[in-house]
Each structure stands twice: as structure tokens, then as C-alpha cells.
Image 1: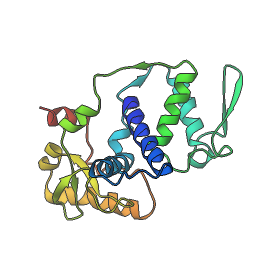
Image 2: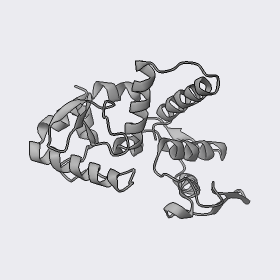
Image 3: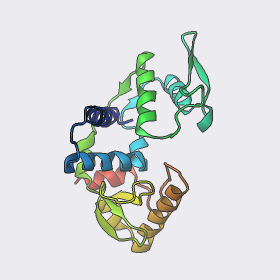
Length: 207
């Protein structure tokens, strides 16, 4: 998981909450841009790819089952060191999974149980280097990721080099799949085969 990334986004959310509660104006372009990034990162598959790998896979699996709860095919509770731990929301887990909130919870639980991570040299700066762009349902590259108007059913984000390596019809296919899934309330819609972003694709985009 991008643990540092989740912590950054969580801090942004908490800061916005503080501004709301204290009636402080936060209607700035920077805050809006951060909110857009958060929404789209929650809804694009690259955020779920593990770059800080758990060293204890069994313990991490327990954290994921606890986070998913019964609503998303996980467990109502798990046992760690003989202690029963219940999943949020009465065993149902998070309403939305995967999401930054849910994955952050899983990471925090895993860490509290003594889990550790094998760090990989990648962080948010790499994402900026990759120049993720948004694709509309006609297959056009229409701007930077984080600038979509429809936040409830956003289209697809891809690294610019990956997007340019695909045909217009291939880009359109993955964007339509994402858009249609979003309209049905789905939060995680896998890419098409042609649109799948591999680690090799990401490395190429940073050159």
C-alpha cells in the first residue's frame, strides 16, 4: 500500500474538517485540487497496488478481512494473539471498499498488531512524474488527472505515455468501462486488458 500517501490524504481530510467545523473559508483552488485528487485516487486502480509490501502476509490478510467485513467478503471479526477484534460497522466492514479510508484502516490495524513493511522506493512524487491524465469516453486525452467534473462517475486516468501508446478506441473502451461502472455505484473498476497499467508501464512513464 501507499501508506505515506494515505496518511497525506487523511491529513488533508482532517484539515478540511477542521476548517468546516470552525467556519473558516477553504474554498480555494488548492483545496479543490486536493479534493479532486483524493476522489480520483480513491476510484483508480493504481492506488491499490502494493508498493510498501507487508512482511507478514497472514497478518496482513487478517487486516484486510477485518476491513472488508461481511459486506465485502471479509470477516465479521478476526483473532490476533488470542484476542477477538470486531470489524467496523457491527461486523459489516466499511461501506466502500477499496477506498483510501478502508485501506488506511487496514494498514493501521496491521501495524498495531506488530506488522511491518518492506519499503519500495516509490512515493507520491513518482505519480507526478508519471503525468497521469484523464481519458474521456471517446478516447480523447482531455487533461490532468484530478480535473474531472463528474466525481461520482469519473472516467479513466492513465499515465500519459501509456495513454499515448494505446489507440483511441482502446482508450475509449477502458474509459467507458470505468464510467459505466461508476454509474452503477462501483468504486473499483479494473482496466481493460489493453488499458492495464503494469509496473513496466509506470517505469517507462517516469523516464
